[in-house]
Each structure stands twice: as structure tokens, then as C-alpha cells.
Length: 103
Image (cartoon, rainbow, N blue to C red; front, side, top):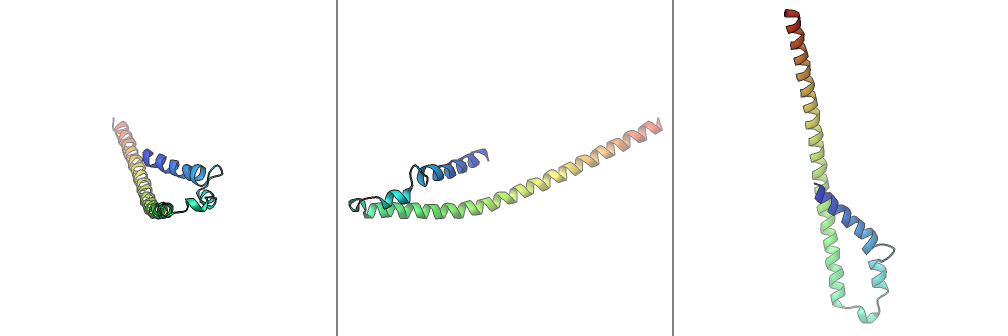
């Protein structure tokens, strides 16, 4: 879990600071390219990046929903465990009282 979280944070940071930030911004950089640098290879790279971002968006949304479900499951299990432990403690306490009064 830690690895996937760190990778996601790095990607978001890179987008904000490296590829679409103040220091460098892909749309601005492409806009400022001279006509002699506009070619099919550049267009293909941009199209591939856009497709990768689209796939990433879909994957991130789907997996985010899965993880929210997993978090809800963990919460339910933690609550059930706490309730179980409370019942166990109450039963043990009740057993100790019974033993103390019987003795």
C-alpha cells in the first residue's frame, strides 16, 4: 500500500511541478515551438501521452473506488473486533465475579 501511495504522490507532484508547472509547462512549450519542430513524431508523442493520461484517469478512478471499499471493509472488521473484545472482557469480568462470590 505504501509503495502505490508514494508512486501516486510522485506522479501528481511531477505533473504539478515538472510537466504542467510554472518552471516548465508542456502546452506552453509546444505553443512556443517553431514551425520547423512541428512534425508527425511530436503529434504522435502528444497523442500517446493523452491516451496514457486517459487510461490513467480510468484506472485511478476504478482503483480508488476499490480502495474505498477495502477501507470500509477494514473499518467494519475493526468495529466487529472491538465489539468482540468488549464482549470477551465483559464475560471474563462476569466470570471473575461469579468465582469471587462462590469462593
